[in-house]
Image (cartoon, rainbow, N blue to C red):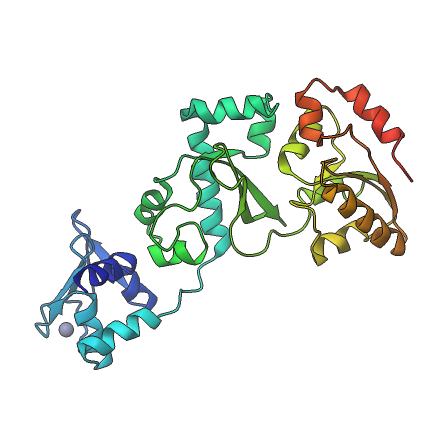
Length: 331
Ligand SMILES: [Zn+2]
């Protein structure tokens, strides 16, 4: 019980809670103290103090004081147990998800240079161009530091859990992963994390939409578009000079992505994995049918057996060879 109580209070700091109730306050001194009008009694001169570090309040007007639970008891006229239930039911506030994800992406981007393991992994996957790494805003999640960073910025733990950045145990969701932010209309809508260790599932997204096709704005005017499955495929192709490339972030296209591909006449080069279980090629074939039904020219690019675009370039394939594969693509 005591532990749960502490966790609840830690996840929903008193100051956050009061601000959600539109409590207007100004800081006093440097000790993390705030003062404003008392929500518990009527007054014209502020006498309600909150100490954000201690997570406690005290009102010099009505003499009430205590922690978050005590505040809920007094303000909602509830018993201790009712107050707890009330707080647990509190839904996550309507924060702007893009702003939170943007902060997380920026944080991960800052970490990249500090972790040689991350740099080494990018090298192994053939990503060498620092300008491209910068352009795609590739970052690294070492694990165990995002929550601390974002809660210090004023985001509550339950909010971070709501967006999937932090798991139910309060730990960072991304641990030892290379991170690519996914944008839509200039806003970050999701993060993709590629594990650099083999003991974890390789691919992870945050819960919620992945958005549309990756970097679609940059290619939508192009009469020919190369479509790949993964962001490492995307990155090596871009690096090799194929800038009319976009990525589906997986094998199955969502409705938004399909609509994007079909929003005008173009040729789509489907460049999916050629793997042993042939799931990549099956998906490509199905997609080609669907695109053709919408009047879009679809061609399947056949990489050598066992390859995806990333491994093709990593294992010595060059732009000229890939260009030949494009030209030989099956109509
Ligand atoms: Zn008061």
